[in-house]
Length: 132
Image 1 (cartoon, one colour):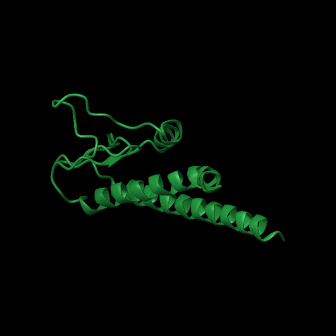
Image 2: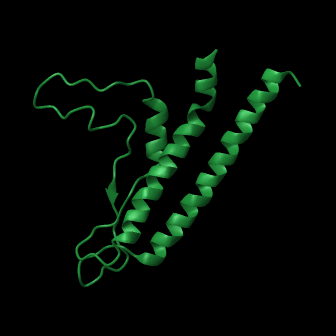
């Protein structure tokens, strides 16, 4: 029974986790806007979400001592990509503050929407359980 509830809520929870992770990445970009040679980073949310849904049950195995430690690479952790700036700065920093603030706001709004959808699904489950 609990595995059905978990699978019912899993896509919403994965979206919330990815949105929270992306917020942290963008906040790091904003915090380093004045750091010389800092390279702005982001994730491809669609690719990360598709990967999280497809690879939900995959486990990483370490079969050789030269392999990376699976504990260091959390399953489902999205790959960070460097952003190409429209106009680079003299000090080599690629953070474009206006664009980052816009991305942060957009991501926060989408996080709130995902939270609202998750809350709605939980209320639907409660209604079904209570039989109303």
